[in-house]
Image (cartoon, rainbow over all chains, first blue to last red; front, side, top):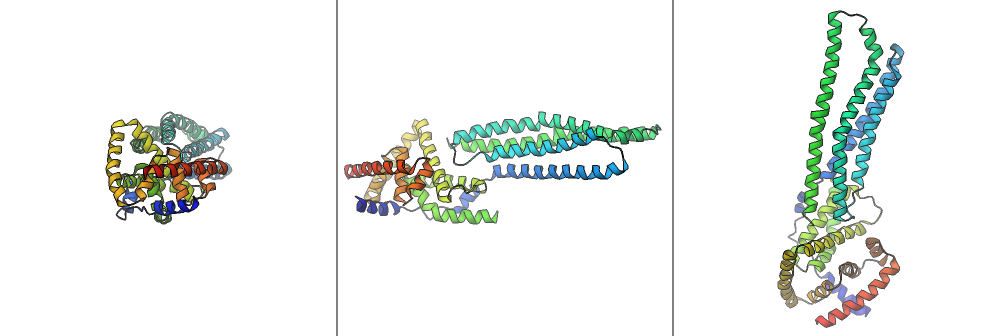
Length: 200
Length: 163
């Protein structure tokens, strides 16, 4: 029986893939969309860890010259860490999607990831910016109080101009820049989910 | 990125025929087998950077290929029209292949086995160790041994019946 089976092996292995099959086609077809999302998350994580370190460093220098708020400092650090950790969690969720699992399982995981990503880019982002704004206000309050001792029209105007610019930036950042990024991510995910669904 | 390309090229060269034969034992159509093989390697390319080396490349690739083939079968079952067309296409190729060589008879017999048995026998015919087959399917080596013995017997019966 084993001898017969050896012959079967030879017969089976006679079949070869056509040489016309283009490797380049595979390369072109296989789009590394998910890898792009992972790369973006990694970039954000690194940026926010650096930001947290920069805040610590700046506070150390400021503490020698100014009386800044401890609450404000910890809120700013907390915001950076929240951002880095939330992106780390998103990255973890993406890494959990393995090629060896079933397609249906992949689709379910991608849909869940998409919902979480949308939440973080909308409500999460609004909460983040509100807390961040409050943190910045608290941190700079001692400085601003000193600054506002001089109540001339020019100083007050300058004060409101800076705060106005900050609020405008927060609105643009939350509702334009982040929403645009979210839409881009959703497009990539949708495309990927559709390509997987077309296999079913 | 360059490194990824190099690894992919190496894997493609090494496992192309392997994957093709597994796909062919499912589709018995060279065109469909090549399409399936392309799907398999697309998945390999997409997930190559996240491969964590918990198993050999061969085990990983075989698992991807097996999943892709099983998904094709489910897809065909859910789409009777297409399934019918596939069977019709296969019959045309079958006639052609029967005249061409004996290996067609072998592939025909393999196609008559159940889904999982097809994967097992394809791996056995590729000289994959029983330990590795167990890793691909998530079963013990002893279990593989028992299954292989049964499948070989069944394959022999099918071959003599088809001949």
